[in-house]
Amino acid sequence: MPSLHKESDEALIQVLKSGNAEALAELFDRYSRVVFSVASRILRDRSEAEDLMQDVFLEIYRDAARFDPVRGSVRTWLLQYAYHRSLNRKKYLHRRGFYEFGESRAELAASRSEEVPGRNAEELLRSGIEQLNEKERRTIEMVCFEGLTLREISERTREALANTRNYYYRGVKKLRALLFRAHKTNEEIGRARR
View 1 (cartoon, rainbow, N blue to C red):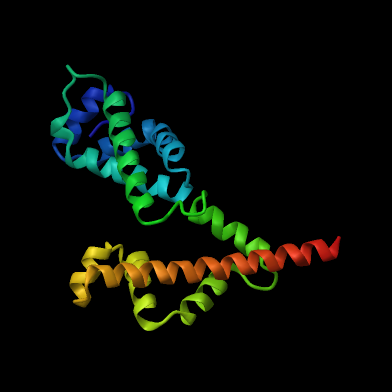
View 2 (tube, rainbow, N blue to C red):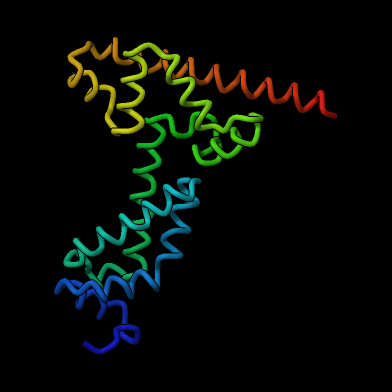
């Protein structure tokens, strides 16, 4: 097959409809930066934006037949996908407490690992999780690592939803207190060094 880099966006979509992954690669080369930029501005987290960018292009690959040139250009279609998927992802992350501290988890982990001398954020969090009771720990792990909602956890564990909520929020409160204490300790150490 001849090189696709000279083809128009609309021609690439036609080739993509036939299942040709090279057309997707070419669209990715052309638009990945702008899709990433939209996702990054909305999500405020680089790794989430990168994941979303990949998801958008996979959806474009699956939904190429939905493209309608009468409704706009390929660029506009891609940006609409990016915008709407980013907003949906941000809502999802808000529900999961991703932005609890007013910053992304990646920024929080980086700042916490710099702020706590001799212990990085991962060690601190692991230590905090070990201090939780079994039900709190299990609930937080299911939310964070398995991506389950509290309702799904309630059904899986056969616990009342109210109890599951209590385990989750009590555990999160304990972890926040641990991070806060570590932060305050570090501030005191910083002041003493000055």
